[in-house]
Amino acid sequence: MTETRHTKVLIIGSGPAGYTAGVYASRAMLEPLLVQGIEPGGQLTTTTEVENWPGDTEVQGPDLMVRMEAHAKAMGCEIVGDIITDLDLSRRPFTARGDSGTTYTADAVILATGARAKWLGLPSEEAFKGFGVSACATCDGFFYRGQEIVVIGGGNTAVEEALFLTNFASKVTLIHRRDELRAERILIDRLMKNEKIEPLWHHVLEEVVGTDNPKGVESVRVKHVETGEITEIPCKGVFVAIGHAPASELVKDQLDLHNGGYVQVKPGSTETSVPGVFAAGDLTDHKYRQAVTSAGMGCMAALDSEHWLAAQQD
Image 1 (spheres, rainbow, N blue to C red):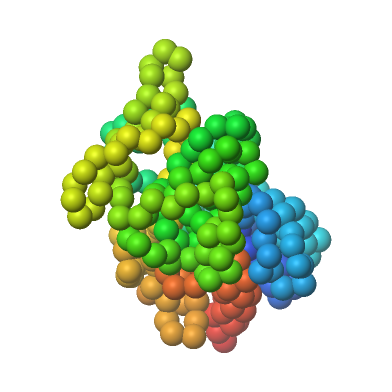
Image 2 (tube, rainbow, N blue to C red):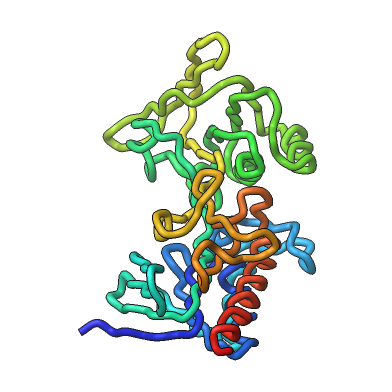
């Protein structure tokens, strides 16, 4: 027999937005229930040094998320280790079904499911995922001590990954389709000064080359975007760092989306196109995508839900 649980506010997701919503909703005496999802703590759990979190000159991403979870719990937020697989926003109370078999009903929902890594979609990339191809340097960088590796991308994610990987690799080749990076200036400056990193401009990944027994990466073939010339670069690891896509699958046919799948909210608010449903963090933010802005939106979502629930009782 499956369990059904009701809450005034159901928070789906557990990054900075979700946990901050948990803190504020708890302080508003809404007795929120937070379902952590497939990656408790969100993207920051796969980040090392965080240098732009106010109050901490430097903090480890996983440590910051452990503190946030503890804070939400201390305020009274109930945190459940489950994954929401289905969400019905067509009628109130809203209904969510967990992978555990539990059904959750809620008067209001705060969506904080974040974003996840994008992939290039190459067959060879898929074939070697987990066997030399990764989207998480902090997860897998340790395996490449003394090896040559490549990083694909040109934004903050790629530069941060490349810099981190120099702790292990003998050489990091950063492959970018343009001739300039889109990362923050301070990160670009660090990358350019790092002798272990060699940028390769105007190139895209064409194919990951490796062996099947044992399964592993041996090299990559890259193509010059202007001449079409193919170059083969020896490497043992390939880190794809081309950004993230919003995790909006649960609501893609139920809420208004924009900019490639981000949940649309009303200006200056976290209100979505369905009354009583609020969205915060990277799920809705295609512009800033920072931990601190996600936390701020988590606060807004909790306050918005408090005001909306109060209005329903008038």
